[in-house]
Image 1 (cartoon, helix red, strand yellow):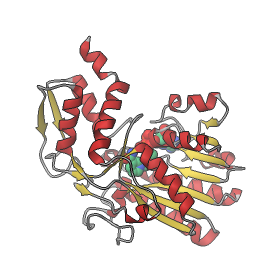
Image 2: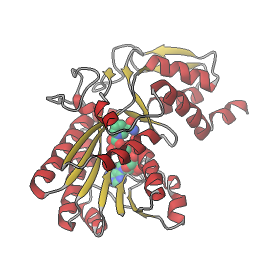
Image 3: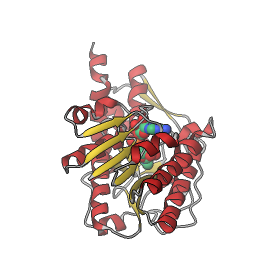
Image 4: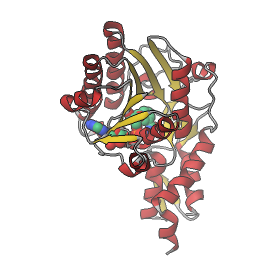
Amino acid sequence: MRVMVTGGAGFIGSHLIDRLVARGDSVVAFDNLSSGQLEFIQAHIDNGKVTHVQGDVTDFESVLSSMHGIDCVFHLAANPDIRLGTKITDTDLNQGTIATYNIVEAMRRCDVKRIAFASSSVVYGENAPLPTPENHGPCMPISLYGASKQAGEGLISSWVGTFGLQAWIFRFANIIGTRGTHGVIFDFIHKLKADPSRLEVLGNGLQEKSYMEVEDCVDGILHVMEQSNDPLNLYNLGSHDTASVRRIAEIVVEETQCKDASIEYTGGDRGWAGDIPKAMLGIDKMLSTGFDVRFNSEDAIRHTARALIQEIGFKQEMNK
Ligand code: NAD
């Protein structure tokens, strides 16, 4: 199969490409490298399994010219920084909503029928029951990022209903693991690298969310796509439990061996405006396909902290 992965040089996209190449697909990684890194997929490019297109999903002509001959699109390119919406209000509109329109419209024109979309738990908003099942509604996101994910879901669903697309929409929990370039664990390690004596934590530390290891995430995507075949397939992807930000801070302090670091909370029930303090996805539908995660939240956090400490070069720096 010839597939396109938008955001293919990113954190989740590059792990997905590892799996797609392993199963024998030929891959076009469409990525503007704004937050992705070519080195994550360089080995596949060198052996001819992956072609990188330096393109922007907000540029319709560029998307269209890359779409010919594709069997399935994995649409992952997006602004990954939820907080950015508190300062710049059109990033998610352009890189989420408009970009998703460009993808499905280019698919329609090139007769490409299958799409998988990286959506998020944040579409549920903050008053959803926990754990939140896929059939919860109405969904009322409270961040601009969440609004763009919901708009993307709506566009895809309408292209399914109107133009015969087949779609898999995945609402991810917090995805963590190697090659992570953003998120709470990444931020904490960088803060401790800059100042090993203190760790500033946004909010009161009681924010509680579920975390999923990135290899579990990409395995889950491919498993669910093999096991479900409706015109529109909607799945939460997450783990069985949650972890608090306080616990994450403790784990990162332990793993960086900054034993004397004082953990300082900025206060308030959330990290920033639009953050959802408590989130946990219902995963019964995912489990019903026969897929289960290898890591729960705390194991995934510790595993990720160890991996990112190596990747960031934290210990080498400290031991100089
Ligand atoms: P990431 O930043 O590592 O990956 C995004 C990739 O898209 C990067 O390689 C970036 O260079 C590329 N990109 C961004 N804007 C682009 C544009 N305009 N044109 C072309 N390429 C562009 O982030 P990630 O964590 O791997 O996220 C992948 C997807 O999963 C995103 O859609 C994100 O919203 C979604 N998601 C992630 C999480 C998470 O916890 N990481 C949770 C829910 C949903």
